[in-house]
Length: 164
Image (cartoon, rainbow, N blue to C red; front, side, top):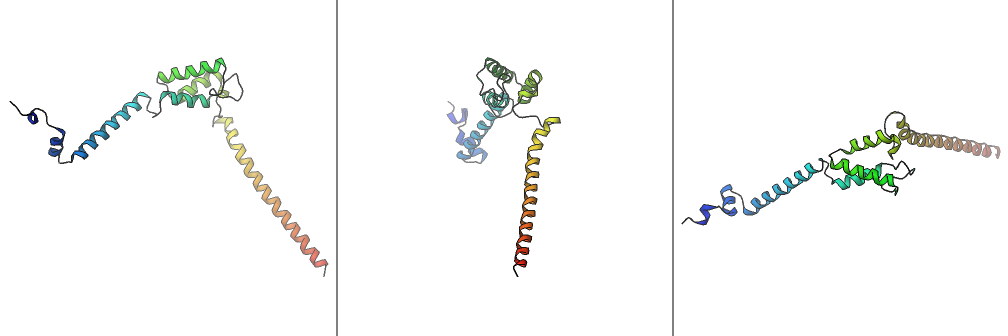
């Protein structure tokens, strides 16, 4: 009759053959298992690291309901918003990327379906003009204040010269 250790080596003996402690051996196995489950999870959600529902909720927040001006799909309670939400979830399950889904809705409803304007072409003005206007306003304000301070200093100096 064969001894049990000859039939199937115990993990402790295998670790000894490798020259590592049992803790290191089991820690390595645990890390390998965790890493492999993470790889599997990323492979099933398109490699984004997010679940399908999390992606759908994010997309619901960046697409505007065509019926309700200024409301995202996430906020809207219309029938069209519910239909668009279900289309998003179907497309995610089919393996579409977020950008492909956004492009799909832009193709159907136009770029006005995006809550944030695109950063290309004429829409780029919506991103560039406000900060430039604020910067120019601050520069003009500083210049005007310096001129007024200089004028008041001149008036103060003239007033003190006339008093002599």
